[in-house]
Amino acid sequence: APATGAAAPAPGRSGNAPAPGADGWDHRSMKDFTEQRDPDLFAKTRSFAGYLRSREKDRLYWYGMPLHSRCGSRAVIFDELEGRKREFLMFASNNYLGLANHPSVIEAVVDATRTYGATHTGSRFIGGTNMLHKELERRLAAFKQRPACIVYPGGYSANLGAISALVKSYDTLVVDRLNHMSIVDGARLSGAVRKIYRHNDMADLERILSRSAAEGTGGRLIVADGVFSMHGDVCDLPEIVRLAKEYDARVMIDDAHATGVLGVRGSGTAEHFGLKGEVDLELGTMSKTLAGMGGFVVGEEEVVEYLRYYSNSYVFAANIPAGVAAGLIASIDVIESEPERLKRLWTNIGTLRDRLLDAGFDLEHSESAILPIVIGDERRAMELGRAVRARGLFCQTVVYPGVPLGDARLRVSVTCEHTPQDLELAADIFVDAARETGVLPGTP
Image 1 (tube, one colour):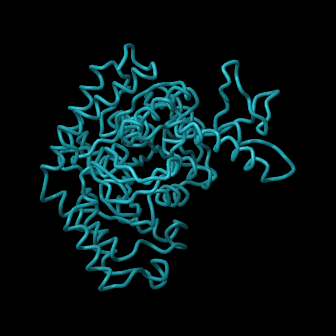
Image 2: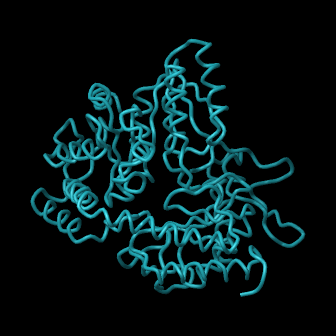
Image 3: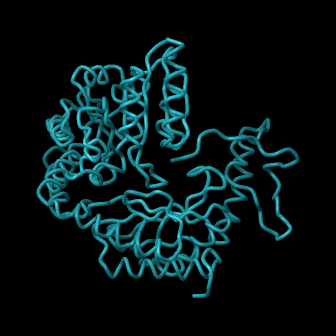
């Protein structure tokens, strides 16, 4: 989850000039450019451009390279720094159950697109509702075992729309420090008082709720990621629910990385903890396990209907095309008819996690398909990422603003499509690259 807030460059430092240390390394990060002040609004963009070119020249920034194939356990990517296509072992995909490449899903998208056209041309209120949107909402509500569902154009807009519709300036939004940036931006848009509790620290959450209840103004909504996207750990939902009841607060859980991963049926965090019906709102994205685009919120019918009329990101935006909706319905069909995919995913998670832990890597408290290889130092994390890619494995190097400064890491995503051979090779690559860069002791 992106870090919240940004500070101006340190005194004596300019965002315009390089800031090399004694070793010649430019110690600036992306944070140094966010608050660069200049009468020319675009000055910061020129400063950042020079910094970016330098990082790319050293093959440390590798973001946004285009795929030239389907994204499975392996993928062909055009290396823009080297000017050639390369096949990589892929560990940077959120396609946890492999549904993006499932024949039934692809066929459903194609058939519905031929029937209903490439897209619709209006918002859901003005000519943009297709019968497949209604069916998708019905199926998502049933899958999540909740009364009703609203589908948004994206997961980001779902958080923006739901939070800003429900929470107002006189209310309080209580959020985990490591929540996704869409939750942070939803809070800003709502104008509510935002109280941040330390990550998964339930004593701190109770302190905030107790103080808010004593002040007695407005309502309270607790929002937390189910699975934290850059850390892989799971929120303490049982305690969140208990405290919400005690202090008369509502709860919304963002299941972006939990839907299709947690729970016996893969329906998410509430099922994982046996708390179905105890969470007021469950939010999800369709661009990850469900292999499409869009976002959704499930909850009580009255709440969902209110969101339809008061979520600006729903009312004033076109929604997902009918073909995408058809593919998502097919994805739910596959999840329900092929439970072995979820079992295979968890077998793969355990296999790679054990290998990386045995090698001495810090994976924090990951309990999901996201395995963070925590480095801390930004330079060393980028150098490890470069060494991993040089060996033919693609994963995400996460620095600020993806994580706070000093918390840099590699983010490894496991899917059910990885074979035992893929996992063995991946572990060997991580170990060899870590030894080469000094992250782990020894030599390759």
